[in-house]
Image (cartoon, rainbow, N blue to C red):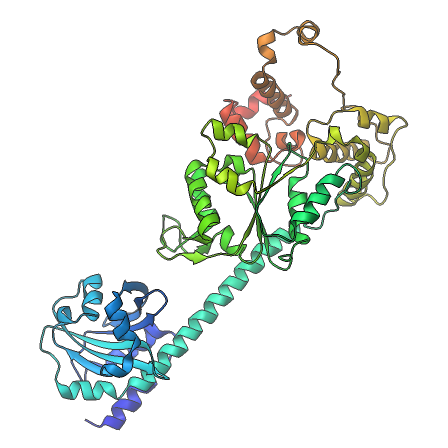
Length: 518
């Protein structure tokens, strides 16, 4: 045969497409008429992992992109890393007797086969192999190996071009994915003002400024609605990582079955519905900060994996086999007593001590009442703008004193919701907050029983919480989510409210709505 024509035809076919699977298939359609060929295989060597990775294969039925890693023992790794000591092209007329390719044959359960392996060398470095396989033993002769050796350079070029093309495509997907994610985060608003930084939150802000330049984990304590997310933002913004991402995770809002996928990502086909590879929150936070809100809600099995991330600084996607290094600072937050949860074996003690390197306690609003006037002014300005008013409403005389006296069990979030509700109800009239009633400070349990005509058993925290949630649902007409839903009235996340309702056996959804209509 004409060697120049063979070289020219194979070069055009294998370099004719950046998609290596299509290129291999086009090449096979020509090669099989020249030498025995049932399949073409392209591999690359990964010296860091010590694996021979199958990039693509092609048979009569077409080409297939692959990402299968075949682990090589140390003596074979040395053989792959010293290309000068071994022939560029070799015949193995019994693939299962070949030390290297025999492992690939076992992975794919090939029948007895013969192969010719062309080692692709670029700048004296082994980058991969281009292999032709034929069914049966003893199928190849020296003349076939000589012909196969002609296409070493074009195969190496095709492999290099394909690798760069795939890297660019992957980078493009990652950038599009990140862009979509961060646009969503930006719409949520990251640049909120910290009202009270000079007064009620002065001690907290001093701690923030001390810890921000470090990489140590921070655990934020505080009741619901005290502004833990705002403080996490401040730590990130004052840190050297402020140019990196700040990824927020509400551990109580993610179903237990999806927690691993959300935090650590998953590979395509890892489970039903995993149609694409997806990076988890930790991968997205690489080079920046991850904020784990409601950390006490994290299931025990996920706590084990989080501990490994903190210790090893690496993750593994669901369905994946490779460890991925991550450089992430962890800020976590809780409104519960984690030490009690540790004593009750509901939270791992080793994880608690890893997360609680720097604890910061955020005081409730009732302990920093000097901030209330500034907060009222800030929220009135913000909510008026959001609702579309072209002015900021005033307050009925004496209202500010009433707001300062009130204990605000829902903290800053309750104050924000109360102001929004008052603006909606009063329109352009001064705000009076008739629905804000202060809790008497000196009343005894016995007096509460007499006054409210309820038994002392009904005053347990559990029963009070059940009544409180049911009242909110009644006001909301059974709705949990939305601006006028029960979660908004209570000043908590809808997912958190549903979780509490499940634990307290309070019905919700379509079947329960009828019972809450007013």
